[in-house]
Amino acid sequence: MIGKEAYYKVLLPEWIWKEAKSREEVKRLVLQYMQRYPHYTVKKVKDGFAICLRK
Image 1 (cartoon, helix red, strand yellow):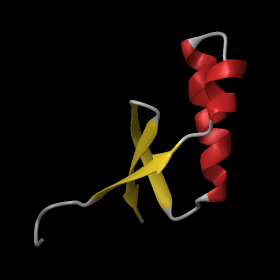
Image 2 (spheres, helix red, strand yellow):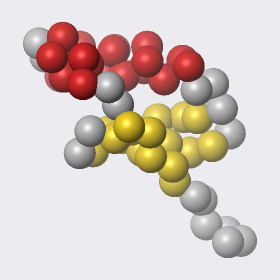
Image 3 (cartoon, rainbow, N blue to C red):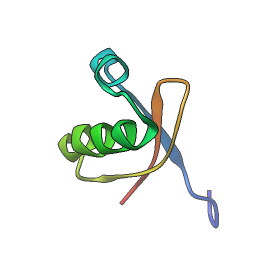
């Protein structure tokens, strides 16, 4: 896979969606949760998953 970046999906917990009241709060909670995965960088959130690049 030379020249292509591999994306990884991390399933986000349901409490993020229940707790967040705005889009900005979702972003904050996702980034807070993703601190548990220091080797991943979040690129986007889609269908309950964080789409990430591995550092």
